[in-house]
Length: 262
Image (cartoon, rainbow, N blue to C red; front, top):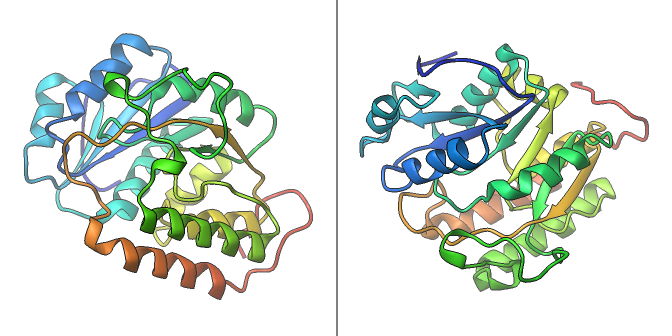
């Protein structure tokens, strides 16, 4: 693993939240303190990705469990190190969880229960209806549903959804939602391979390799602060790259159960 570790490095759960954090100095305390206070059954690790705003210093000062990367590696490299930690510690499930407060921990239990049914990947979906429309919300009571996404992001998400279905035959309603839970086989694959990023094209690839995918309804909060990996100006290029990557994949669909790495 690249980088240094701070914190206790103890395993208390079979579920680990991997929290990539670039410049999240304004939100990381709120996010991690909520997990510690309200969700003590969930383990977490923050992966600071060469921040320039002191996010790593905050984590060290607060005693958070964290891996500190010496330079910025981007989301793929950052997440790879988090999954290496998850693999080395023997976690059964790992959750991709944002450090900006957009992802809500109250949905982790539903994802966990769905994963126990035998799914390799459980994805959050902003397009599936919640049992109670007035249920869990983001911070300060705000909600963001799939219908409230910006026009360009919503169009891009729909196009990616169509591309994944065309390539895999599997319907994924919200491929761009970053809240995802992976089982141990996927964890180990992310830990071994530096060419896999936690993005929709990788989800498509894993489905084609035999991964079984499910979705659970979620709501996400609006980002209040910090710096996103996906800048607004890069959104069009990102969507175009995802579509091209998915459509160019040559891996054959797997009809049987089990993930392959050929």
